[in-house]
Length: 437
Ligand SMILES: Nc1ncnc2c1ncn2[C@@H]1O[C@H](COP(=O)(O)OP(=O)(O)OP(=O)(O)O)[C@@H](O)[C@H]1O
Image (cartoon, rainbow, N blue to C red; front, side, top):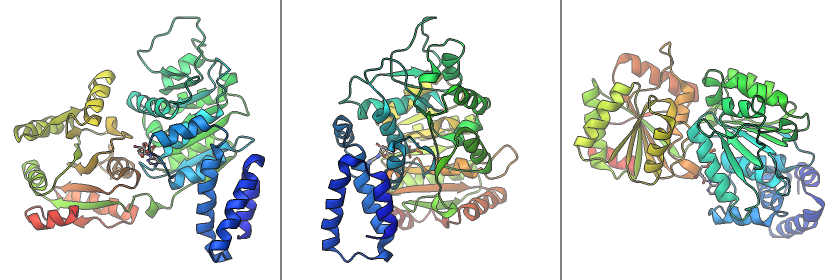
């Protein structure tokens, strides 16, 4: 075994599992030629064993993990989980591509740190939107299925509690404004008793006015030894600065720029001249390949509404999601889409970020994402295409280009991620079929 992995093993493995790990490693050494140069592989094996052994002390969690059909960890899970479960607790800033299992990783960390005998909040998880808070809550419920003593409550708008009450649930998940009110104004939560603070989708968080300050104010109320975990799919400078303000002495897991887009998502662009032509291209794509579920992103509500109408007229089951809807309405639309009741979701920007629907095999950028100054919005691009290709599945991302300006935006996105976006001729059915094979 190489020295580095030996050192890691010694520092990470708890006493109780140490012997077992050594046995596994020695068995492995006898089977393969194991030299210093195998280090990457060595670490993967090590991390894999550690991932499951970290859960060894809480069999009900391992049961929950298996119950969800997880039988091997993703890279982020096997790397981050031993750090998150280490004693004493370690802080973490972690980047991983969309759909690689970050949520599952920090949910496991929270569940394994709570003491179910203590009937007060011990873990806070802050999400940027109502929908994401509900989605993470569902993962907690599924994974904690065999751990019923652990309870969860949502700190989201609309969940009104009686003044003066103290929460008994061990995990609180919510949006920053309500969470802050519950900690300071209403005192439903005693922040001094919090052991784990999770900040999810940090990049989306800071894009929403007020969320950054609210998160920092919550963090300042927490005890010094509280474990801080921050996750994000992208790390532009502003996200990085925020992360460092909020997480002291962190372990850092960061991706290289060219690793940010997943190789399992194939990216294409289609040249058109108008929105009608873009719609025609879309119809051609639908005519040529079978699409389980698709998400289509538009720049404005008006275009989204028009497109949803056109697609319905062609016989598609379409859901429309846009910013002016009430949060409860939005959650209901997403739920129907997730249940497969509608096969196409047409949406504007923000509300679809982070949404996890396994069956989405195609993402269409009907309009390319741009910021308010008309520059490419690379972060949003990454979040959008990350709605497909979830957890190692293959996915297609198709970009509609309808002007010189949008071609220029596309080139700049391509340059930013250093990944080629291929041209697709949607009049050629064979070509479309090929990209899906
Ligand atoms: N170890 C695993 N084995 C199999 N499936 C997994 C595993 N971990 C997570 N998944 C599944 O992969 C999908 C993506 O996971 P998750 O939502 O945790 O990713 P994420 O990195 O948080 O994504 P995003 O950045 O978009 O929020 C989910 O449907 C989840 O159930």
